[in-house]
Length: 447
Image 1 (spheres, rainbow, N blue to C red):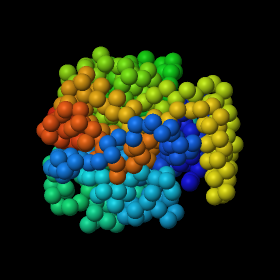
Image 2: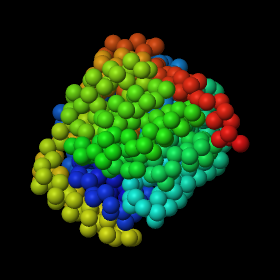
Image 3: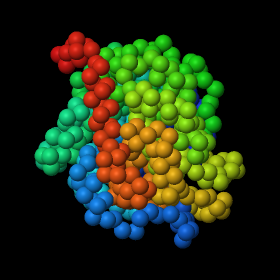
Image 4: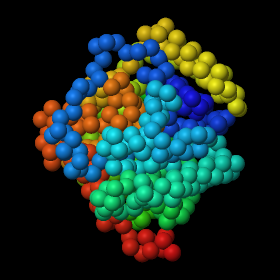
């Protein structure tokens, strides 16, 4: 495991205390993806864990084959710079913590999705902005280089029609998104550059506030800094609308959600979120807002990060001990394999000591089915947060996607409805957002 894989698990899976906002992380979570899921870090879940359908029916496979299967939050690009790791090789979650690669996409029936340019929030000054700019450009380049290196397997997608065309050609769609607008150096005009390079979705903040928007935090929402969107954040919303870039509310505060919904001329997305009426967590959204999202044509994509799905039973004492382990590990600039293995063992022992509960497939489906009931099947999709903290018992990687299809059919949804949830709703949203773009702004950005 890389230090980033392990560190991401600590920050995301158990919703640990946020570091002070002004402190830059000593590594910029280069390996955010792969964020070793709690299931791999700890003792096995109980024998009663709900691991999903044991058998996938021919009907389910036929439904999936006829659908456009898209996941709106793939953090896998963070693995592209990992020594020895190749997207074209078949990896194992149990062995290296990764959750998406080409062979498993084929096995699980995923046709593509939004591949994330992620940058962790650091110092909000000239130096921090410069580092963020460089990190964003590096990740963007890695995504485009991966596509260029594998033209028989992947293709850059920029329009709604691309999804079906690329699937018909036997390749996987690579839409590009940005998680945390930090690389824009607090300058919304830079969005035009990213648009020209293929960016088609953007979220404004991550786990702490930035110059654009207030964050939802990591469990309990922190006190707001801007009262939602800053003036620069509002300008970014307007620029995204002009370019036909999808606006993603995930990780931003409820106030930001309300303001986005009011300000955006186009429907918005929650690329990887859950239902707070199922489990109260600052990263989830309440039923009233889910209905408001649907009313304006938006889509909520359901994530599979265990700490957002259930109460894991983590106590303040547990979090404090866990934080000490990560803080000590973070200070090592080049951890050895032995040090990584030691941390993994320490985390497993800590989870066992405090009897930390692990989320499972049933917990994931509880959120998904609730959100479908509240929003309507026309406004729901999948954004599991693969390679970024997502994954639960029974749904550890993308190869298990057919389980979700089977579970939806078992719940009574028909072929048309399941197809929409698998990706049809996402394609519709892309089309709607791009139809509302300003042709002159798009032309100027592409010149």
